[in-house]
Image 1 (tube, one colour):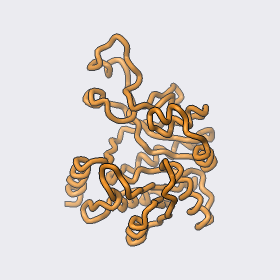
Image 2 (image 1 turned 135 degrees about the vertical axis):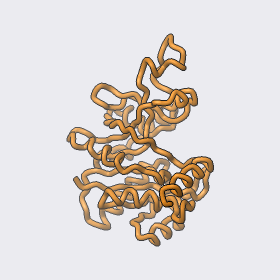
Image 3 (image 1 turned 180 degrees about the vertical axis):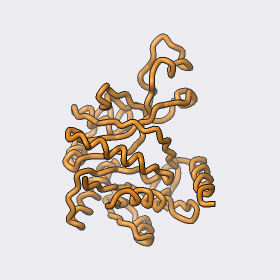
Image 4 (image 1 turned 90 degrees about the vertical axis):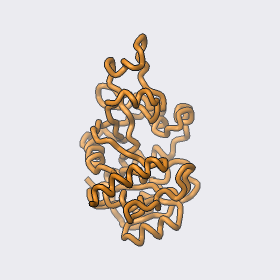
Length: 252
């Protein structure tokens, strides 16, 4: 199976400006992510809208594609990067993986698990979820949650905790149901990525600000594989310091 890993990386960020270039143990964040991905995949590319990121990726020897600044989603940016990279290298890909650029502690087993969804030929799009094991996560009501059917296809994604457990105190919900937190890594067959990007935004996508709901609202399926590996994204200065400490402890 020929797989292309794409790492979207925007310079602009409402909370951490220039996030992909922030130094972590002597390397920019985007390099940590790139090295994890390329240790597993033969073909990896960063998709960015900023020349500073292009320069940094080229300096550490990575592949990078300059994309339009007008993309309103990471998926549309991935599509442009896929087209440019495919034309540049004349390679036919079976699967495209969209990987978050702000997870310098990325576990490559998650990528492997995601790709395994395409062992089923019917899979067009896939993502990951992790069972919620800490009651605090439900109390915080923070993150994105997903409910899945018996065939491990997504039914719905929400920023609210779903499902709602009726007539049970919230502190007891985990005793009644297994909740799944979504991990924002996606994989597509090329034609599905093209189709996804061509679809107009939908009401539930706009309401939740979750683009994956666009695919579901159009009657499509998203295969969900379950991982036990926690994912730590860098969205705040607190996240950054936590990740710096973990990486520093590993390099001692």
